[in-house]
Amino acid sequence: MWTDEQRAIIDRAPAPTVVFAAPGSGKTSVLMAHVAMQLAHRRVAPAELMAVTFTRQAALEMRRRLGRDRRVSDSQAESVRIGTFHALLFRWLAKAGIPVSIPLQGDEQRALARTALAREGLRDPRQVREFLSWMSRMKSRWPPARPEGRGPREMRAFTRAGRTYEGAKTRVGRWDFDDIPVTFARVLEEHPSLLTRSEQLAYLVVDEFQDTNPVEWHVVQALARTYHCPVFVVGDDDQAIYGFRGASPRWLLEFGGVMGADAHWLSTNFRSDAGIVACAERLIGHNRMRMPKRVRPARSDPGTVRACTAADEAEEARQVAAWLEDLRRRHPSWQFAVMARTRVQLLHAWRVCREKAGGVEWRTFHDGKGREWDAVAILGAVEPNPYLANQPETTWQWEEERRLFYVALTRARHVCGIWTPVRVSRQAVRPIRFVHEMGCELDVESPGSEV
Ligand SMILES: Nc1ncnc2c1ncn2[C@@H]1O[C@H](COP(=O)(O)OP(=O)(O)OP(=O)(O)O)[C@@H](O)[C@H]1O
Image 1 (cartoon, helix red, strand yellow):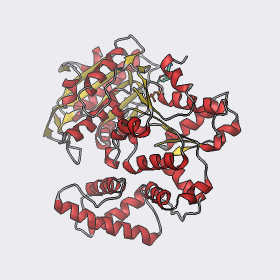
Image 2 (image 1 turned 180 degrees about the vertical axis):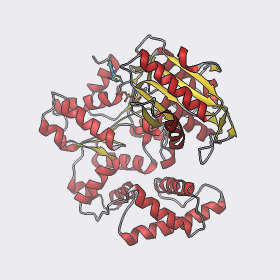
Image 3 (image 1 turned 120 degrees about the horizontal axis):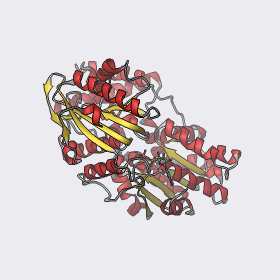
Image 4 (image 1 turned 30 degrees about the vertical axis):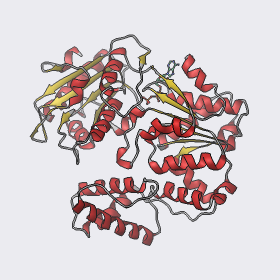
């Protein structure tokens, strides 16, 4: 079942390794097969192996795959530390006897942020999200630095609100999630023996490494140094989409040099038809900060990528509903998703489509990551996008937007329909530049029937 490329990675003994994986190339399966191989051959003690990822769902999936591997006993599988960075480091701190506090949940965090911003006269609800993502970026820097960025007036207000917010957290005796890696990094630097006495580490593997932020990258390097342990990472620099919390594809690109790691590639996309892979390749080729790579489709079927126009969002939603209905009639076993850059865009379309589009999944680009469907509709592919609090301006911001679009496009197995309404939120807009970059024709006539 495995390709030679996959086999070579799975069979490696523990060693510093970086794997650049294309979308749909089976990276989590390969990573966990590699972990299972180490356990089966008793190269690493299960309790000394730590496998890290970024979302709870991904961690559960890793655990499930390891549990299913017949080469690994139940007790071996249970002893491996698998989890998100935050969960694993939090547990480690607690086990080492470092005082920890329960992180605030999203709504609790927003409430503290709202109060802190109100004191600065900032009452727009969108500023709460912006402020929290700004705080997250500031706290993810290593070494910690003075706050910066944004316009000078707003930055001063955010900086003051940040102090109020931190004070409020201390008063209620809680952390936020960003406090976990920062605290861990400090303890590892100042009192490493507290941590090394409580856990051993012989092999560290990290999935989705492109999502690492600077403090997490620092923790990875510090753990490798402290324990003299090899680190194995898998990621796709083209799918780095967490810039808002300080993540950057840079660390994946630098990993080989910094850690003296061997580079491997997973270049076959098993998910998408050839035409979709070709469009995605043309699109992402416009980014500069990336590892140049060729992605080969495993399937030879052409697949369909088509951009469709509509007068406004209401017409767009009606067209998408008809498109879904038609595809479902022709392919009753298919799975479908409707994706958009923001939640508000999805909500508008969902109100119009919900009766005709039962069983369809509605996902933002961010939370569609790691998933796949037979047909994907992308809504509101326009610029400027009136629903974005900040329009992309710099090359860096456009590259992040392009990666987000690339993630959405590469979720499709056979068909991807892209909608570019002429008016959005009563504003005249134009098709997002990516439509042209993909080499996709704009279909101004009937989008539904022919796809
Ligand atoms: N050697 C193989 N032969 C056939 N199918 C494979 C092989 N390896 C992986 N696949 C299939 O490829 C698909 C994509 O795998 P998976 O979702 O793990 O990819 P991924 O690399 O995590 O993708 P992404 O980064 O885009 O989320 C799955 O349906 C998986 O079963």
